[in-house]
Length: 348
Image 1 (cartoon, rainbow, N blue to C red):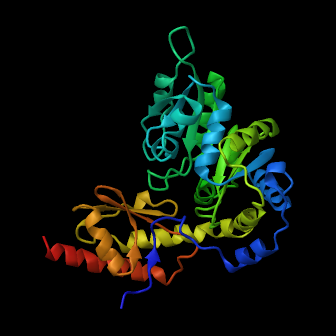
Image 2 (cartoon, helix red, strand yellow):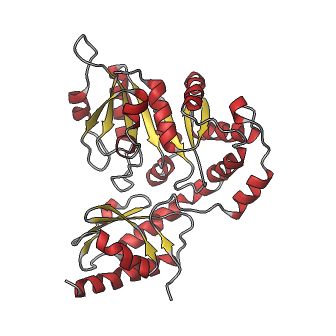
């Protein structure tokens, strides 16, 4: 008998909670394209207040909030500074080129952190011959760096760099509540440093759909127009926004448990033959497992033992904890890895 599946592929795999189903059934609705859906307005206002911004805009996805923000904050031909591993460059279908026609200046990073000296070297002043750098984009937490966190001091350095250059600072904060939880700070301490921010409701916060773009009233007014242009104007979207309200009011306060369980898995996977798990790499809800043989070799055997995860690189597995993985799943996941390690070793 195959054991109950523990789905660690991502924190996007959660199902709506019973409370969310009730909220969807009872949400007051309007037409959000006419800006009169009361539940959407409640969500946008709540998100803006929590993150210390003037206004918010509910969108179907984090990719859309990122690309809408980029379109509003730049003009064609501008140069934009990005971490070379960031979601906006790596996982959004070439959106910066397709929608905003900007030049992506990618910057090396370590654990999701770009050095100010590297930003300085890649900054360009607009001239007859060169494009001008007008925007710095950062990602906190950083997906491809395994849920790593940019601390408050580094965030301040980014703000000072942007101010010194006269450019804007944008935060892809898809998992910024995880960052705030790991740092033990109010999320506003991170988000208020940035001119505009995207927060994702459907990752660690557990909603089925949606992200919120945050910024000044003027910025959001233009973002609303761009969202419509991109096809993101929804009608009775309060049905979805109702889940996001629960995410912000209830589930964001559970993120520390996700981090604790990730640490427990990290500890439990130490010293398994054919793998390396580095304690310092688990700071939020990600566990990165480095494998001696191809990571793909592990996927099906692990599924057979009731654990689903992703190969994040040729020799690296990614496990992501979320609020629908409880304490009882942790020893089962660890046991599955130990069993599969033994199986794979016997085939070498």
